[in-house]
Image (cartoon, rainbow, N blue to C red; front, side, top):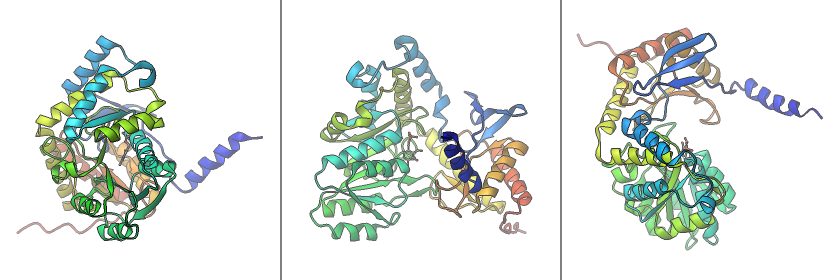
Length: 408
Ligand code: PLP
């Protein structure tokens, strides 16, 4: 039996559909973010990163790096096992207290990634609710969809951010235990969920709410509690889920909610029980990032300022910036091959790193570049990005909009 052929065929399908993924060999430089070194086939080159989800550059913050180094030096590296085997490491307890406080909840539970939090968290919650119906937003992340599937419970999908459709589904199932599952900020389009209206419906129809704030925690709300904090609805959402890997610059994920909900997930979730806990050094670093962002709004304000500037400069250059209410700047390409080619040209000819976003991350025909400015992208870098993009757009004969006439 030629087993390799199965895999070769599978890879061939991806190549044929022009969605075989290639990752650049990059090395970030702490203290100089967004600058990085690209270990290219032709040798080392300096590049500027424009697509990292270390949104606020906290991965290089001296407090965060310091906490990680100090904790690893003091306690060693690994956690030494699952919590069932090795107990709670003290840094995890402190991190969970910090997270519960961030979201104004009784408790929080940390997992090894945001992906695992959703997958095992949603599956476990839904299994513990008898006859549970899940109502899920059409654009929910794969980790949530996997959690829903794994729960084995009935689910229905409501049109993206469409509260009228959500209400229709709620009205059709009176009295049934229901879990509404959505994100607060959708990271490919950069749009935001109508959380207050979703909470209104949940309260009216007696449903529970589970909101993924992965692309919002640290970045929105006066203390970085996310969109729910910004919109004043954090206390109305039953379970908030987040990551430590994006705005907090580390690794790991979590849920926050009532003590009972968190204790039940801790006690039943396979993705929590059967895997080694996060190392203490990572927990301490994440705690340092969360604490810092609770009191410092410089990063949040500068982040928004940079995102607004990138949108304005790229739009003025005639580039097809897709409308977004948030820090995400999607640039429409609409074709997988040219999307990939644009990224190759940006890297090879301009030293700019942006990863192509193709199907299945976004629907076919909506392929795009997804640009994520950070507080550390200076004006000159933004101007350089616009020039490089226009050049690449012309090379690939991608459409540019007419530039607005300068005022006479
Ligand atoms: N939820 C959403 C909406 C995401 O986009 C992602 C990943 O990027 C995750 C969850 C998974 O989080 P993590 O990267 O911490 O595993």
